[in-house]
Image (cartoon, rainbow, N blue to C red; front, side, top):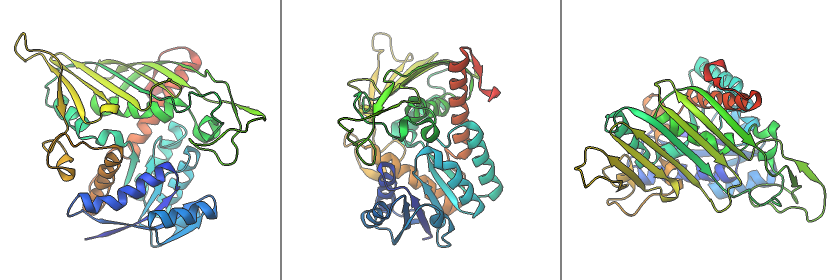
Length: 387
């Protein structure tokens, strides 16, 4: 079995998720297409890097990212840093001939994302972007049903991603509120996942029209390092929030379907309320991530009087589920989507096959984000091809 040597950059929430997936792929998929070996981790401080190497089982640690990319023993550079570092690291990795696995959004804007895609293409390296929600077996089932024509002509897509993790106005300022580091707010952080679902299930966007708003305009400074669990300084200065708390936008797809997407990071009571519904001429699909092992299906071909949404539970008949469990009802979780994503990446590397979503797809999502932001700024419909 081929070994893929991995250099992980960033040891926070998402770095932890990636490290767990590397450990679990050979245990879930037997035999694995390749063996993932975490050889080095890098982070911004010695303490973070050292703890990451210890906790994740890496052979060594370094401060910063440059040594990870330069390490001759690294085959795959894994980027789980704040958004503003994605481009610089990815360009360096491509120049060094390393394969690249990068979290979403791929870049701060479509221009940078396109540059990353083109650099990787010139270098001939394999790329993947971390849109792991589409790896859910019921999402893959939904795509199969749509492509098989079971829903007929697709009319509408409606998607949302609502959280309340930042609804408390006393939650301290973090990099996610800083436009130079994060880029957009709820749109890039949450809405990007729904954009990917819309593209995955329905197709390319023709044009968009958006409305964004920042409701909590200032945040207290964090006491020490900041993250989701940071505490605010009880008394002290505040910093202006530089991107949107919520986004709503209309979509016209290239094939004529219409849609809406909305996202909010301040939707009180919602935890990970990511949902989508697809309506076609013969039926509909409905999914809510908080019940992530269920797909609601309505088919007009059912007998009159027996029509209605039915619930399909994820089971071994659906893509990848059987590698985890032999029966429906046990269910998969968030980390399992990452495991499937990493499996697909390793399989592509071992067999020299294409990946999805790759950097080209990551660029297309960033292109939509830019179009929505331009629409908000100018108050008009914007063609995605303008970007």
